[in-house]
Amino acid sequence: MSERTGRATSGATGREFGGEPLLRVRDLERHYPITEGVLKNEVGRVRAVDGISFDVYPGETLGIVGESGCGKSTAATSLLRLEEPTGGEVVFDGENIRGYDKQELRKFRRRAQMIFQDPTSSFDPRMSVGAAVGEPLLLHGIDDRAARRRVVKNLLERVGLEASDYDRYPHELSGGQKQRVALARAMVVNPELIVADEPTSALDVSIQSEILSLIDDIQEEFGLSIVFISHNLGVIREICDRVAVMYLGEIVELGSAEDVFDDPQHPYTEALLQSIPRPDPRRRGRRAQLTGDVPDPANPPSGCRFHTRCPKVIQPDGLEMDQQQYRRVMDMRESLAKGNLSIEELTKLAVAEYDTPSEEQVSPADLERAARDEVDLPASFDDPAVDDTVERAIEQIVEGDQAGAVDTLADTFESRCERTVPETVTVDGDHTAACHLVDGQPTAASDSFEPSTTD
Image (cartoon, rainbow, N blue to C red):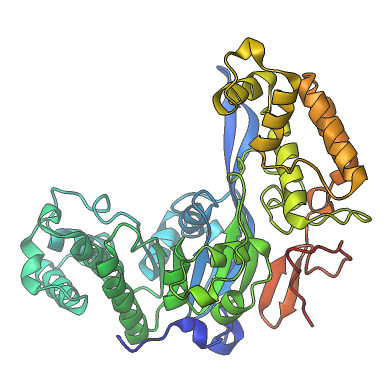
């Protein structure tokens, strides 16, 4: 396995695996109700997974990647019905498992297994390795203890452990050994599908490659389909045939690993890729910096959910600003909408940063400067009209009229990205993206980040 160069070089697409998908997910949702009061009245929903669709073919590894909080782990538990989905379909081998009763679900679980992120919390410390790995066999009706012992010992050796580890306990094993045991437990019922949720993130880097190689070997030997979930794009590129990029409960880009890594179409994908450390300084290039935090899934942004952080957010028609400066103005709007940039905050910032002796001596000019510095706005803009609008908004902030400042900025700087939900469009073959930059609609020019072009 040391000779592997990574799946991204293969250019594999879903159709190239042939036949029908083993797993077909359509518009999968997992929402959590927000309640209040004694009667637990529902006042909202956390949209952890919000309408994702993808296929997994026999023998294929599909990677799901995104930042923490994007919903990828919830997607994993929902598609196996470890958590009940609140919408959509999960079709496994031609049957919608959402309609399964307990008996049918137990049969399905024999064909589809999961590997969890933390190998330590995956095991009962009171159970031996052999008992833990053999438990699924017992649950599925294999009562012969000697037969279970033979199967488990054989599997332990297949995953790089010793048969003698059968009688050891989890606390006696290293993290890498525990994850090998977890893989053995997932394999013990001979599944067709494995969902691996961050299976290497809790391990030392030196051990991660060993586990990845083991998973790859096991897949090749048994012809498994794998849904591999990770925030680590290096891992995803190493082991996956196709990649789905998730942001705030939605899939924003999907395609072969080669297409997604070499020709990303969504700015979020591009930003994730550019965040990967590059050892060669000649290949660093420009980096698309993400601003702000992932929004609250209970109150996702309107339009494209990424517009609050997107370095390529589309400028309104007729506006031709430096793209980074436009992003900063949008950051100011977002900060104001969240209730930030108050007089109190700006006063404290001015005292801390500008050597003002006390809060009482902070001047309106200090507050204006603090408002610009907080979102890294320049002292002036090249376009006089832009300069006037921003100056007026900052004056309103200093006057305590944050709502007025939001309206002033929105009148000039509102983007189509915040008004309209982008459609998922086919870029090329199986490569899809949900972004206004690729959906065929006209966009404003930008001088810092050029939109990707498609045929």
